[in-house]
Amino acid sequence: MNLPRNIRYWFEPWELDAKGRKRFGTWSQSFSGTEYWIMDPRPDEVNLLDIVMGLSNAARYRGQTKFFYPVLTHCILVSRAVEDLAVIRGWSDALAKEAAFEGLLHDASEAYLGDVARPLKRMRAMREYCRVEKLWEDAICTRFEINSTEATRNLVHEVDHRIVKDEVQVIMRDPDMWKRKKRYLDLEPLGVGIPNWNQAEIVRNFYLRYNELRPNTLNENLIKLVAV
Image 1 (cartoon, one colour):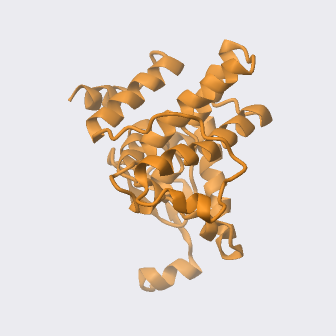
Image 2 (tube, helix red, strand yellow):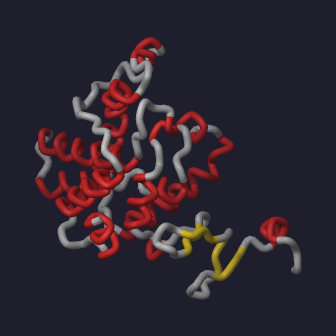
Image 3 (cartoon, one colour):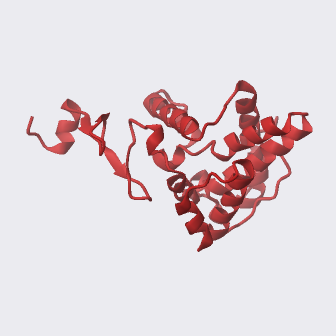
């Protein structure tokens, strides 16, 4: 069917990828210069370099903060706090590190999909987005061999919520608004410091954290980037 691309998509929503596989939707180019398919993620197309660059350039809280606070910084802090809490609660060292690794990559799908405000994501109109987000999360877990369990997911979820209390005190113009609006009153802050790293520091700290949890598994491109 010889139709314009924007119209053809609705009738023939399939294309062939670089490996000749039939894929749903269309491709986009990643930082590493490879194609990825937003609606049809595959583990072999998940690239750590793309995740690092995507999340280090993505603003948490949609950029409505006193200084640029990227998602990647948030992920590093979540990972550290998850491990600390797991140890305090008597988890084995291996399980604590596995949970910490899950925390380090818990927002990795946002490198490919972008961040969506939580109130918007909860609307019925966003069900398809949430379905695609779950596909990316599954592909990322497969790619990095993340052994997610109910216990590790719950701990990451807890830290991801509690750290908001720490973040807003440092990066928001009016942090007391959250208290006045009675938001998150039932959550205790983690007591973590919120740094204002530049991008080189963010990437370097991610590298160090990743290497602590999964030694000698980083790809060469990321190591070269960190060395700059």
